[in-house]
Length: 146
Image (cartoon, rainbow, N blue to C red; front, side, top):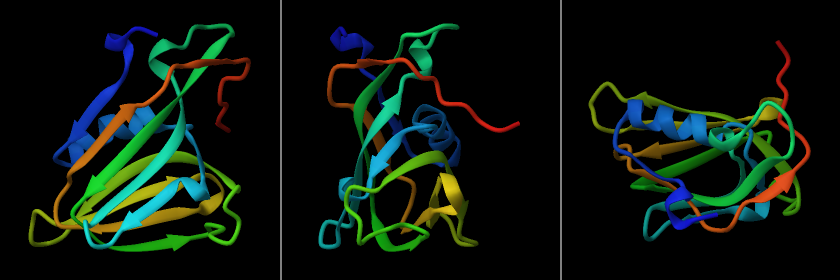
């Protein structure tokens, strides 16, 4: 993978976050890959991102290790996430921003397959996604029920 093929995205509003959401759809994340630095107000997660932007009609497909960082995080709530099982895998379905009545704050929702969710109360949307490794081949393309 060439350096210019590495994905690097930033989000400063809900519309930008939708672009990152599309890039992380079907990403696999281990519970141990989630981290919240309360002092820095930073939430990070490492994920194995399916490279939709490089997918062809037939295999092989690719995944790449990526990092997602959100700044200005004030609080975190999780639903249906096995915090006691660090090796547990979750699949990201989407990211969504619900603004507060008084902008620029709100809640970033990381929606997981199986009904899981990570809700981040943020001062504003300040997110970054970047690939941190070389892609590897995978024979499977994520499938969704219609």
